Amino acid sequence: ELFEMGAARCGAAVAGGGVVVGDNLECDVGGGGAAGLRTVWIRRAGPLPVGAVGADHPLTPDWVVADVVDAFQILRGDR
Image (cartoon, rainbow, N blue to C red; front, side):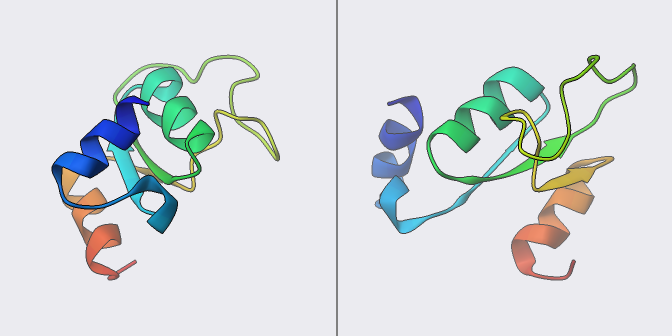
């Protein structure tokens, strides 16, 4: 529902697809994926949660990047 509200404020719909960029694996990647969106996880320093990422796990992002610049390159289609 949160992602639908955000898309609506931008004049779009989640059903039309989209990409969520965030640094919180559970909220951003998990929530975006559950809403049917592709996800970019900005991985900050620190360990990966054990068992959080892999194959068909709901917390597996479509892309993992180091910073916002890398995420922007994905959104522009440069990666």
